[in-house]
Length: 178
Image (cartoon, rainbow, N blue to C red):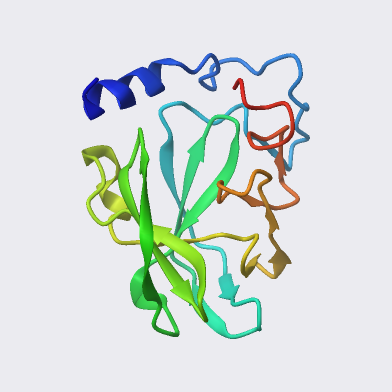
């Protein structure tokens, strides 16, 4: 099977596409967003809130008011942040991964820990985040307008959970079939 065939197959495998909230989804209040209302394929939305990312030791890694959130059915938003707003240099890390929507990712480390990734040459629909940095909130201290971000469950995922985002989310126990 060619790589292109495998990502097309992965795209088509999803039952939920943001068109109708499943019965098990939590009903959002007026000040909340349900991850089940996010579309598939994902969309990019500008976000001007104050974003800060610190290392686990407290070093300020990035500060910006120019984020882009990727909204994708079943996942908390992933925040893409402009590389020019980095406060420190990140070191390239070994390894890569492939997203059926964005393409090939590369990884970065700080103080010996892999904490971030980016898509240097994403598929056409994601070129507006080409080279932008994403941080794992499980491995860093992230905040949105001063609110501490909680990590999306599952280890592999990089979604940012804040009080206005409700699920359940992909990555939690029992969600592998989504």
